[in-house]
Length: 109
Image (cartoon, rainbow, N blue to C red):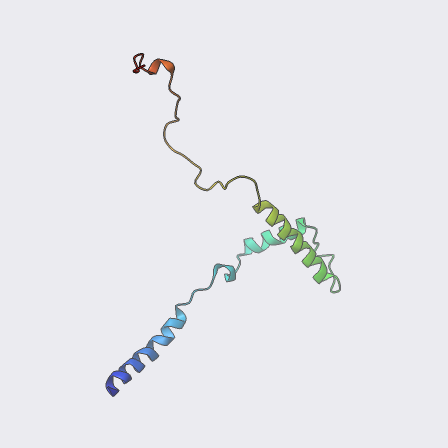
């Protein structure tokens, strides 16, 4: 019994450090690329933020106001009417309506 308990304790103590390395970081915490940072800065500048005009006293209010405008703009773009466009493509031949000539004359009436 002691041997079994010792074996389980040893195996679990060896597996514990391996489990801590198996955790992956979520996509939201992934580091941004240089292009993504530049795109975000351009988006903030288009929302009215001017990094060269900001000073220490007005910096937090100006950047937060610009971020709020960008967030509102992004939320507005995500909203829309109608269904989404995912999976709306179709392949094949376009359906054509049946012509009266294609219907048999003696249709049982």
